[in-house]
Image 1 (cartoon, rainbow, N blue to C red):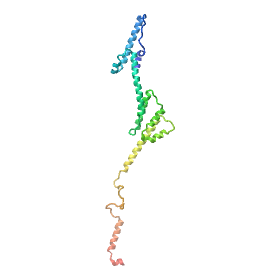
Image 2 (cartoon, rainbow, N blue to C red):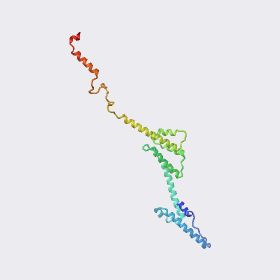
Image 3 (cartoon, helix red, strand yellow):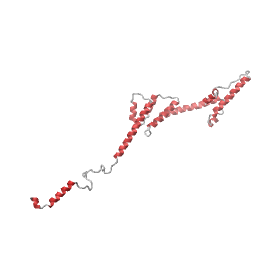
Length: 235
């Protein structure tokens, strides 16, 4: 609104008060100047009112001068700004990363909150930003968190984000690999027996298994000896 009024050469009426003509100094020129000022001030006041919502217009339309109107609006929005700052700070302090969400999406959320803090005039030192992000890393990343905390060389926010992205990609790859290996262990190919088969005293013997060739030859020799005459056996 201030920029808009400046383009119209009306911004000065936000801070100026109406000129007063002293007694005995009234003349045509001074009266014309005062009337011109009142006309411009009237335009400025209504430009400001026209920029308000209907609800706010009903509240501020009774204010007599542009200066009073502008000061009232400044008090209102400065109070709201103070509340916004407290809200943004609380949001930053209370933010915690969780294991159930992607860490990169949570890092992006935290960066937005930090940007909001900076936009409110509460600039956060980059080292403080890095340390805060490290502290907010979820519990399942405790080993990587300790690794980052013990690094002697300071990192920028960009370097920290890159490291977190690489670590998350590695964890996803390892998780997929372990799932594939686990699925292979539980698959039994056709023709293979399960681990429970072949145990106990009859290990290696399957039901209905045919005798081996050497077993058949031995049985035939026994039958021949049984049918051989007794006398020949004694001989």
